[in-house]
Image 1 (spheres, chains in turn cyan, purple):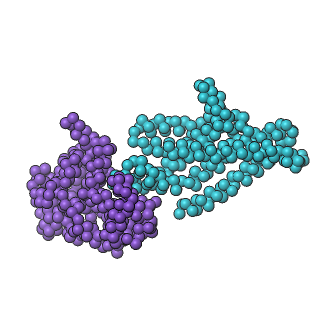
Image 2: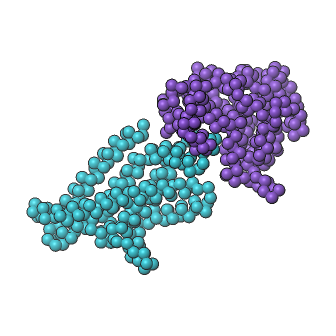
Image 3: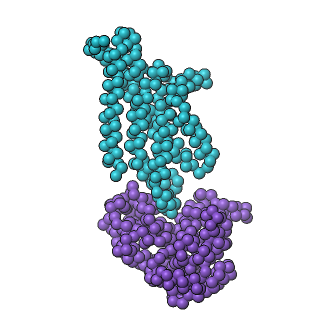
Length: 216
Length: 271
């Protein structure tokens, strides 16, 4: 087996297209999971069980079924009900939704860690519920959980190759297509592997720096 | 003063200064099988400074927490200014109150906690202005000028731009007092406000409270182990034991010549 630098060069156009898709899926997926997870976490504390129970059931269900299954379900089953998105949009929604059930648990831990005295002080000042959340509880909770949320961004990045399963042309799928076209798999796959490290490792370092700043 | 807790005996305690502000009527509070307050009836008149004393677990703090709606009574009713705190009158019947009603009545009450409970994510000034702006609808300027006055009252004007974590416990507690007063409550609840403080910081906080007791007409309900402070500021002292008020009277009476053996026993243990 020989390493062929020209195969690397030939792969580059496809590769950059793939990087772009992978980053898109990771970033937008993260934003969805951060937002939706927060919604779940607040709903876990809803005053009525008619909110708490359904939310708990739905999030547990999503969290305990594989992302690939959800991906296939959204991509192949939803169109039968007339709901159809592009493969990439479907993939981003699936990743965001799946990981929102993890971030929900992270937020929940952060919210639980806010001392009960903070809720009591908010009550004693008659702050409305919305204001108690936005001005008192969440600023304290989110500060604590930023590092943990960041870890899930790295996880999401590493799960993006699953999107190849529904035909999204992210990095891995691009390398397979390149290999299929040129019969040279070694170079494209190696490039993709290195690309994951080059994105994920600096991201982890950044997170650790952030953790040092926030959690003191 | 009578040593038992039947309503008629409680009401024999004559309203001296203005009208009755707080009324507990047959209030019972249980935690599991433990009855913390047992069929308790009493009233507090407007402007009075009342100290609740008694052994720990006797229900003093529970009274404050019920008034602040941090707890709900299992039985009985609480009224503030004649308005039911946890109930509403609907069609001639008393029903559990909605959140909106509770918030409205609760605005008359402020509380200072043992652990201060300042908001660590807000600077001192914003801790004080947050509720006046968002709850009372004051403008930011109004709220800030009120906050500055209060910070002057508690002697912390130069710290308004700091975070609570940059202050000593005593300073934090004085900010918490200012924060409670910024809502202009009729009633101030003080829940063991010096218990978490280093000994050398206690005096500063108590001085501020003495000042407030003297210079305002705010009604105070105070749970404390600082008996000298209690003697100084109290118009009325209530001695609690096992969920009952076993004795109530003026500070001189309770500290000087209590009727009840339990009161004497308790005071000799803490003084």
